[in-house]
Length: 456
Ligand code: 6PG
Image 1 (cartoon, rainbow, N blue to C red):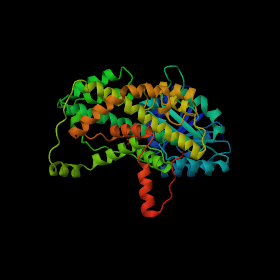
Image 2: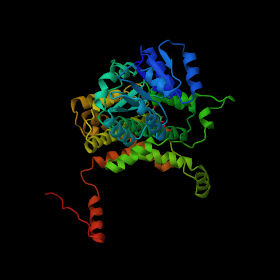
Image 3: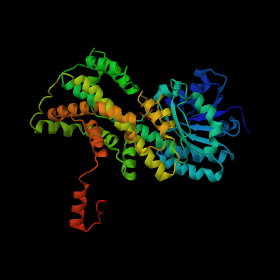
Image 4: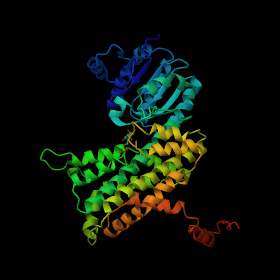
C-alpha cells in the first residue's frame, strides 16, 4: 500500500516535532510515528493540520507514505537507531530512503549504509544543527551517504534548511558513507572549542573585575563586528539572565560542564588521523577538568593562592582580537581535519559548501565563515586555511593581542587551555624548524629507531 505523504518522521521528541512543523510550513505532507502513541496523538491534535498524518503502528506509518518512501529518524543516537531500522526494514521496498537525523557516530552511519545498500534501501546520515529553534525555523543540514537519494531529498531538505543572507541553502550534499555525520562531528568539535574560548575570555574579563552586565555589553558590541556569531550573541544574553531573587543566573550555575560525546569523537579522530585538533581536545579536557569539582576544591586549598591578574589599558580590545584570532585558528584546525578525512576515507568533501552550510542555522554560524567560503571557492584543495591571504592578513593583525592577553593570563593563573593551544598551534605550524630533530635523536639513541637526515 502507499499513501499521499511525501515524507515521514519517526521520533517525536522536541527536535522531531519541530522538524515536522517546519516540514509542514514548507508545504510537505507528513506522516509521523512515535513509540509512545499518546505523544503522536497529542502532537497531531495540537498541530491541527490536515497535511499531518499520525500513525499508531510502523505498518500504518509506512502505508501512509508515497513511494519511494522518505523516512527521517529522529531517535536517540546509538542502539535506538539500529533498533528502529531493524523494525522498519522488513516493511520497506527497494528504492525507499532512510535518513538518520541524529548526532550519530559517523562509523555507525557508514555501517548502516553498508548494510542497507545491498537491500536496495538508500541510507543517508544527515547531521542537523541548530537546536530546537533551528529545527523549527531552519537548521543547518549535512546529509551524506547514498547519493542516489539526493535528487529526491534535495528540494525537501533545502526547503526546510536555514538560508544564508545571500539566500543559499544551508544544506548541501556532503559525500559518501558516513561523511555527513563526520562533518557534523567536526562542527561540534569546533563548537566545543568556540564555547571554551569564549568562556576563557569571560573568565579573564571577570578576573579584571568587570561585572556580568559590562562583559555582556562587550560581547554585544563584538557581535556587531568581525566576531559576529551565534555563540557570541547568546553569551551576552546568558550573562544578563536573572534568577528569581534578582541575582545573575550565570553566577548560580555550578561550574561543571557536561558533554554528550561529539567533541570527544572529534578529538579521537584528530588523533587517529594525525591532524592537530588541539583546540577541540583541550576544550574536551577543560569540560572534564571542570567536572572534577571536589578535586579542584581540595587543590585550591592545598596550594598558595594565585597572583591576581594585572589589568592593562587595552586589555578589553586585546580580548576581542585574541578571541577572533583563536576562533580563526580553530576553524583552520577543523577544516584541516576535514581535508585529512577526505583523503583517508576517499570522500569528495567540498569545503566551500561546508562553510556555506555552516553560515546560518547552526551553532557555530559566524560572519567569519563568509570569507572562509570565498577562500575555498578560490582554492578548493587548500589543505590549511592558514595558507590563505585572508588568514595571513587577519592573524598578522591580531597575533600580538593574543600574546599580550595570554601573558597576563599565565601570570595571573587564569587557565586558558584553548586560547593557549590556538597560539601554540599557530606558532608550531608556521615554524620552519621544530625541535623534533632532538626527539628523533633521543629515539634513535635509546631505541635505534630510524631517522632521516635533513634534505640538503
Ligand atoms: C547542534 C549542537 C547539538 C548539541 C550537541 C552537543 O549542532 O545543534 O551541536 O548537536 O549541542 O548535542 O552537546 P554536548 O555539549 O552535550 O556534547
